[in-house]
Length: 424
Image 1 (cartoon, helix red, strand yellow):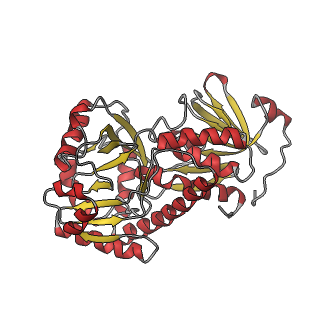
Image 2 (cartoon, rainbow, N blue to C red):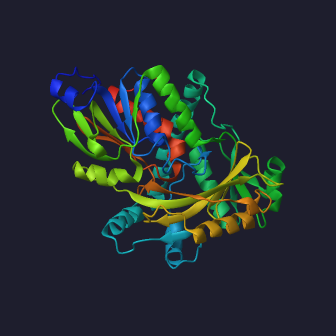
Image 3 (cartoon, rainbow, N blue to C red):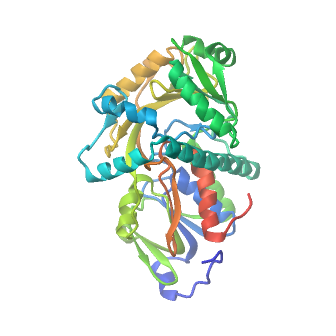
């Protein structure tokens, strides 16, 4: 559309939608979809937001790690990880599992992942994600200046823990690369880290950390709920919940999103932000996206006697600790290829046991009532897909483990695809 919203000319499309034709229909009200609705609406566009759940951010966005890791953009695929894959595939790590090894989709994704795991590809993906992360940070701050919503947001800083010199040295090289491109990070010895975060005194065998002092935390579910209220009140955004998106009908001047129970909503452009469900939906529109689900778990507990103030990622055990509104959120486990949303008691128990081993005083581990599981949509390169594959269709998917971190910047890029580059 060359940066210009075209005038609606189809009365038939208007009647099919059950209401006025909007400029933009956003499919998916996770944190990426809600942020995208905001980016579109604040530019003066009329927006309808559609989701199958009863409210926003009830899928992968609901209880994730809660870290806003703007400076930690490291791609998953790397030469060091490739060396570990045989042992990981054999079950050497209790928090990593590979599902559906003979699935053609997994095989195709895996080949792409291998190609994205060379040193050059890893560095390129890391820098591309860093750029998007820093855009997200600016966009989040601009939003909060306009609309000071409450979601347990804090600039807590973040530390990545390393327990062997080789891993720390490799991380230091990536830090040096990212610092040249705007990341605020530094490598600290264990003693230096403990001065900043005394809770790390319980981290046995700690060699050093990568410290990102400007990284933040916040509750993505609460953020989405609060932003939805702003969107309805200040921007007139229509929300359609309990509508499971099934298909889309494209016409010359409009696109109609078709949902369950005869629900239909029509707009001039459709933005797909459906997380892992985007793969099947887009395939029905003739658009292929290389996505694979990675199931993750979390639990939220009362803070323990040595709860960290700084957000923590234990790189050896692949889990995160985040203080959130007086509670501790712990997230981890990677089940690549799993499509089962049920909370497996054994996986949850392994997560709790590993967290207790990592930071025994961080949480009240005896008072955990239950856990959460969600499917994170992974691309082989770890870089989200923000694209306009055809007229009247924008794709904003594949954010993997950084959906919360990258949501605001991805939303801005999606809006720019529609209208051209703008300002915050």
